[in-house]
Image (cartoon, rainbow, N blue to C red; front, side, top):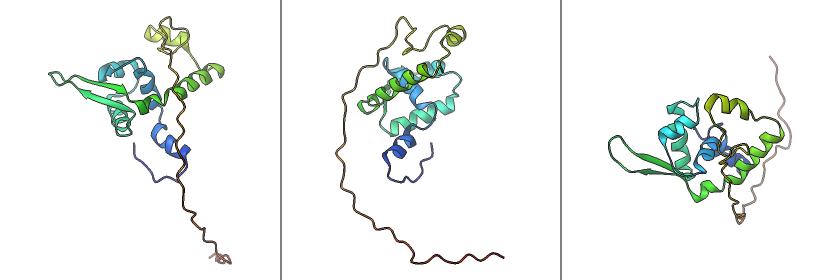
Length: 160
């Protein structure tokens, strides 16, 4: 995903890393443990392989996931959540709860189409329980005060 220059807001920074629809779904799939690329591709239908690989690369670059290459022919590559990636689990659980409250879930439809509920779904008999993550509060850095420059008088607007 192309990165833009940010305004320094932590919300903007977080959305820059998580702001597409596939990132949190990849995290959802990796909660239960390491997965191979094809396992992710099959469980995240209708994502294209190109989109998935792009998201995996971005998430690896952002240190949310770890890529382990076991070599071999065909290649055996697994992805797993890092400690930094596990910091996203409370957000994942909040999104699940919000989806239930808002009635966004189509659990029965998913079960008919794909044969199972998603792993964190409360209707799933083998539901993955998202473990709590201890709250980590970053120490705020002292930011230098940047004076804003304002004009004494606005320039006049000339209409032609």
